[in-house]
Image (cartoon, rainbow, N blue to C red):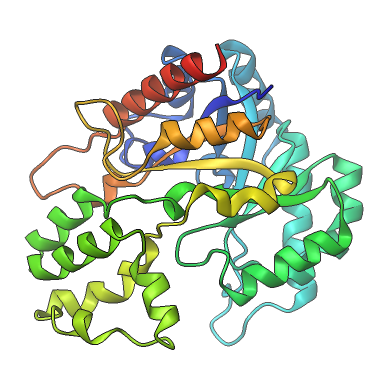
Length: 336
């Protein structure tokens, strides 16, 4: 039987945090108020001096966890290979940075690290001794536009299977399961000058069960002629390369990877007044995971904030609360 639990990535509330409307304490108590079981944190953003926080800050974090009863599920880690203007980091420097992230996660009581998409496969084996020592798993994010047909992702998966360690796995971002192109993105880009015809084309291919990313791959990396025809404005030209960041995979693409999946990002653009998210079938996904006996967290990751229309208020808290309410209701129905 599945043991699916809900979490929230604090990335979802980044505008509240950035503009000082909520601090870390406020965010954690907000999650508690909405009966969230786990938290996903971005240490670089919300833990001072990360990855070397003071013991005082570490103690405060543990105090917050005790106060709220929320479980520290996962830390988002970015491998910043471009720290210097004149060169990329060496392999040794990359590995040393990630070792410090593993040690930090251990201090924060976190047993899972999300490696941002495209982190190279060769970090895995050198990191394994530190993962075992600190009891921290590393997991690559499978993200739309960089998913199961990208060479870098496939190299990581091949290495993960070769090493066959419980300390290496995957985080799935549900942006790969868009059933419709997100409406808030469409409205935002049209407001910026994009053509409705471009998005009508995208709606049509999504309705056919495919997406622009797949079509471009099948067309040898080129836009198909019918897509080129609907690129009319300067904004179309700027946004077209980003349209393949919304993919339309079936849930069954996960079948062979289920033993390696450690966590899910429930990508969310727009919770509707009717209940479900506009673009994605969360209930269908949760039913699929229940059938696979998934034992882990599904974490709200709100990205509709970046597509807020000028003059309109951010809806981070409202959208996160609505998403959690919906996920929790689905899980109650599915899991009992």
